[in-house]
Image (cartoon, rainbow, N blue to C red; front, side, top):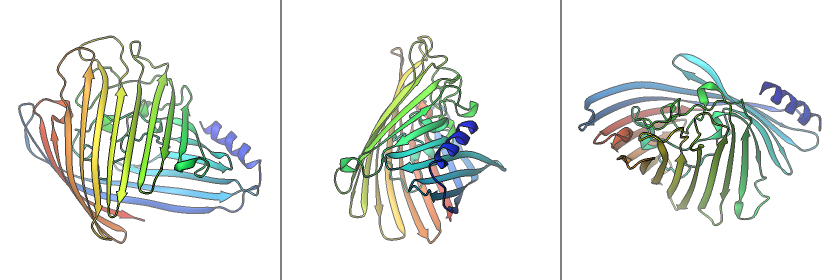
Length: 358
């Protein structure tokens, strides 16, 4: 992939001499304190508490060539468990016919969570290891993309196409599902508390996205992900898709999304997951310039290859955020039924956050 970036850079800049670009540094740091309790026949934990800090810094550069083409480069530096990691990077060039780019661990095209209006975090993304299985996304791969110009199509329609050639998936990100690392698909094809699992094994991936704004306040979109040559998918190859809609009216925005994920299946067994279907609804309200509140409900149901019983996981959350300049205080109270797709496992969590952005 480094060779691809080098070749692309030479080709792009051969069209014209680059003018002096601009360098930017942006980022955020979020400290959180979570309290989680669970009950039911499957598990019981009166009090689990945890502190955390999540950091991300982005170094960006952009400029213009003499021929009018634009270029941009960005690299993210995350701090995880006391170690700095350069995990995401992108190089893109804008032309009159669209934008072409190379993305390393970047450029997600999934819209499964595009309807979310939660002001802190989605309910299923805050609980301890109880996240839902979300759709696949190409940002788990080193990929190339094409984006149509913003003003080329009517009704605000934009289209994006991503492709990850064979062998460019990193071992840590093989078929990464969007969201938490607990949702990543790992090395078997059986159902588990965190979802389903998979090993990519050098397959190729294609991802397509379309969005539109047909009327004021309304945004809609859809995406489709497919993979070929996947190890461990003799009976069913992995794919996923989603659509969403949001509508803004005054200080309120409502959002809705529906998605499915077809799991890779290698051998029909009672535990082999055929697909997972998610449905999500949320509403966010800007009470004033500083205070925002939200409510979100998420439902996720896996389907097995047999008539075996499956349990639908439901997560709901009420959240509030108060912004003071570059600092935002947040609180989220979430309730999960059949958490981790486990019967009668009910989990409640309360999360307090302090975020500094610059």
